[in-house]
Image (cartoon, rainbow, N blue to C red; front, side):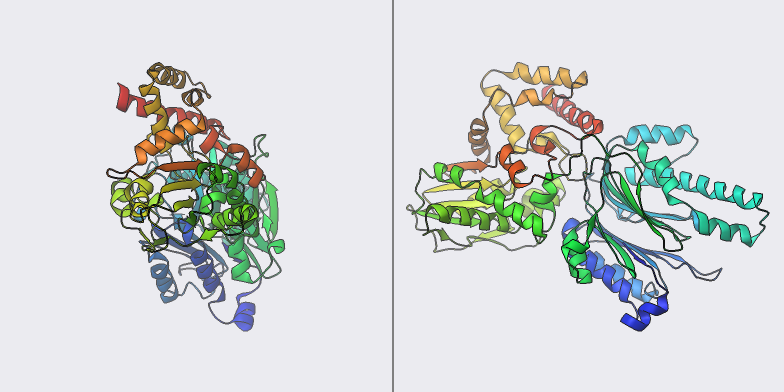
Length: 566
């Protein structure tokens, strides 16, 4: 988001035409990693004459969506006279596709102050409850999704805020256009947020703007999703990642402030900037660690350090997996997000033995994350994403160690990575994950909501069956039905991490591959040691930051159980 704080003539004279829209374009390209399915932008021109459009929006789907929307934006003049800009990159976590699900969402009205445009980085875990709340008030949402329901609820509260100001204007004896001007100048978006956001349970950064000139960004009270802002006398700018602001505006990381849990930054029509505590900070503030391991770009100063440390502190486990044979081992990584952890791993290994053989063994041919691709096409894509460097590994002599940021479904390993590494005929393969075993689903904005998809979970279930312990699966099902928040954790208690590793190897081993394979995962202690300020570890431990997370995790297992055991 970008909000200009000075008259448009100021920017035209100092920077030339289209400066702010160009900055929005750069911000979105620098956050393209956060979504490839679609993109959308919106802007508001607060000084447009009556009868002319003042709130603009463009959306598109596909990998070139950013280019499409900005070409159209310049064509229709969104760069001329706009004071407020908002952009979003779509990354589906629900499986729902189509242009109607691409942000921003727009609620139209003939009164400027009642026009509302929203976008966000979020998943809400209690959408059923909120749906019941607004339908009981008489509303009839056209689409059942958290985005549209949030838009309608917040739009309803914005209407009430406008009506509050209408009543005050009438009491002051204002009439006609003077009432409208009073409303436009006195809408308090903080009131709207206070009466809307406490209804929701989830992880979110919500952003929005009104047709009359109010703008805001708000973070969830548990601090699950990230948000940063930069402010000077010319602009306020907000983004999900700190380096985006640093690069776009040529500033230092110390110039940027992190929005705190439950806080909102608001900018009113007159350009007044406020930081408001909309919802009290949660007792369990758990910023997402997976943002740091995988999802965010690695060029943030803190994330870079954290990822290096994640790699370095795995060295002991790696050497044990090799039986101490560092000399006859080639070390590499799976591009691209594991590269920084790889540097940390190599640095740690060089403290043990200075003659480390490090090579780029795996190359990525297609710039496509199978992690965020629809499940129906994931297997086909995974088999063609990677290739290997030949002639570096001595067949039958060298071990091969490759580090990845995480192992979620195991699809890429089974369908591609292990097969292509085996072409090199190494003596053994050690696959290292800078993250711990992912055992539990996420419901706060990462595409990991189906517990049956996870290779660690599949290994656990298969071990329980093999060892005649299927009664535990039944007991967990009953516990989930009863609402026991810790029932799911009972699944993993009978086994050590190493037992699960060995079972995962059995499940991941492609047909015809006989090479010895070992898995090495980060420990929970190592995770918190490397990323102390982002303790949200529910993917690995099942300790969710909100009630909604526990409820949906139980539902995910119940659905799995009914499909596979009933």
